[in-house]
Amino acid sequence: MKNTALTQKHISLGAKMVPFAGFNMPVQYEGINIEHQAVRTGVGVFDVSHMGEFILKGEKALDLIQKITSNDASKLVDGKVQYSCLPNTRGGIVDDLLVYRIDEKSYMLVVNASNIEKDWNWISQYNTFGVEMKDISERTSLLAIQGPKSAEALQSLTDVDLASMEYYSFKKGTFAGVDNVLISATGYTGAGGFEIYFDEKHSEAIWDAVFKAGEKVGIKPIGLAARDTLRLEMGFCLYGNDINDTTSPIEAGLSWITKFSKDFVNKEELELQKKNGGSKKLVGFELIDRGIPRHDYPITDKDGNEIGVVTSGTQSPSLQKAIGMGYVNREFATEGNEIYISIRNNPVKARIVKMPFYKG
Image 1 (cartoon, rainbow, N blue to C red):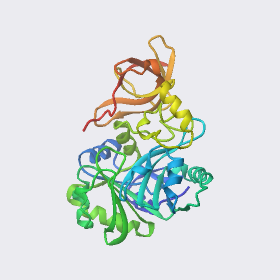
Image 2: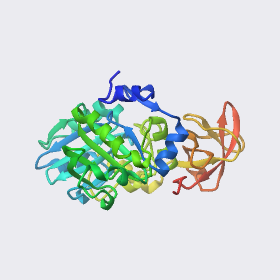
Image 3: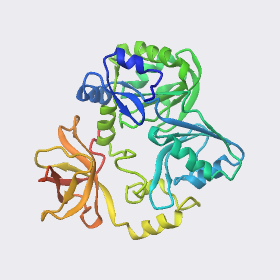
Image 4: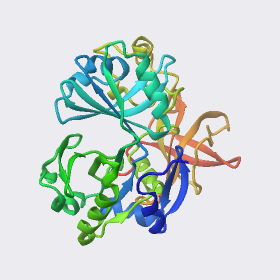
């Protein structure tokens, strides 16, 4: 089991630690509901240093990125970020990721912790462009500081004007007295905020500085459990749950990051799928009757015929109702349709709804 540079901090704060993607990670501190609401209404800090970071450099760095990713990275300018995915050759997804354009010949890719080695090998096999690749995951720490009071909490630590930063943009600057920190206006909570990348040797100093600066707005440490409820309320896909090697970006509702104006891995099959619509679709649903949907629970029609499967589910702390996502056969995927979630062989009535669940 790997540790992040902040593992001892989490333990000293009384975090409940669990294995996640090969790392010893904090799942919660005070409790999911308290932590969830802290991010929705104030500010919370996630240690997500387990994530992977690759630097791609060279004359043809963009050519390689265009080949392996579904989105059109040629639209990026310096200081901009793009959400994308790595399609495989079977119609599925190797991983979803963020692409950062540092300059014309330098990019950073941010990938999921459980897929670092898999992604590295996948990208490497397509690197016929002579692009220099560097895996900086081991030495890079990452804090996600999320919530409507994030800028207020952090502004005293940097001369970068945080409040004026556009969503999905980034700047490099001094942060908490440390040079060359990448400050990114991104996050997976739907609550606004920043993701801060830095050399792991500064982890404890930056963590302490962030909490001292954020004292005035009630900053809290947040675990992975609340990260999951926050992203689910926004209808954001989680790799391994809602998307994986067998799910198509078209069926997962990721057509908006699948651009057919360029050539990329498995373009032809995905283009055909977009034209034909695919056989299933990822939908959001809320339970009408009592119960909590969980990953892999069957979804049925009113006659008990299996029509799909739950990929993510929870009791939403913001909405006080049970919500979930899952794939259903396309003919059942219309908003407003009633479906049934099989919870311990008991059919529980639900309704397909538009995502995001939480509108803020």
